[in-house]
Length: 324
Figure 1 (cartoon, rainbow, N blue to C red):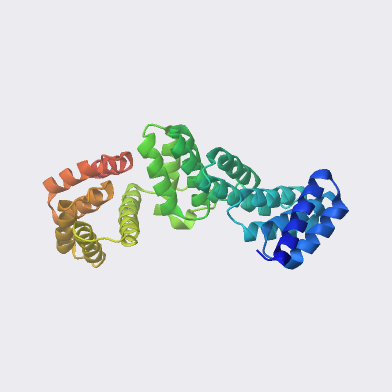
Figure 2 (cartoon, rainbow, N blue to C red):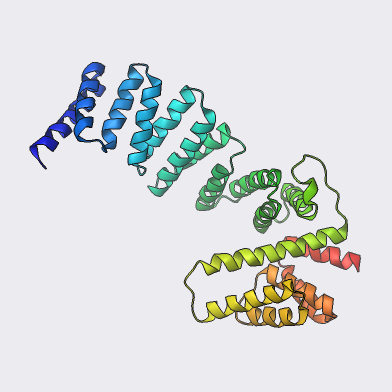
């Protein structure tokens, strides 16, 4: 450390002590001196922010806190100060996003309760923001709190439906049903998202959507394909070899053939994918519908029974049976 650098650091430390003692003019002089030699030191900007706050200059204080947070994104206190000042200056939407960032930082630092508190503040300030509820699902999963997980899944499903992201909304309900298959609120949200998939033109407009049974079944088939595509995409981001790579190639081939209307070839590759370990309800539902299409009714019944291990697909299978 050079003598010059030491002088600037000493000025910063004297400024921080002046802040603690409420000597604001002395603090400002020290921080301005420190800034000339330490232009990328977040402590300097934080101290200047505290000083400007005390001097009732909120605009400059906010700029300083933002710079401290930018220079040191791993310290949640700086993002907290940004958010708190944005509340004070009536910038609730900006504050919500700042609390979201602060919560993420607390979470990474192993402070989950403080993270939860910031995410809840963000959700309260900006109810239409999806991010806080996604994080709160993660928090409640950490707590092993099924009720909390489902509560935020329901909020997410509603927000996604309002945005017209019907398949994502239905998948969120699907996850909630995995946890509480008898929950009437979850089923109500599922029916709404399911109808949203089936009747896109009516999605997000606040009206009730009525869809015939055939439309719901078609929507469930689309959802199964969406789940398989999402699973394939997620797995493709991982480094795979051996059985995993073969399994994913089988799934890819099956979906390509099905998309081109080649039911027989699609069935062959779905069967190969299942034989090497793919066993999600979505794949059994997809192949079950193909079995029905080609008249393999016994195989269709077996596959759809396996799909029915999940309550959503069990409901779809019941609709199929009622429609026969």
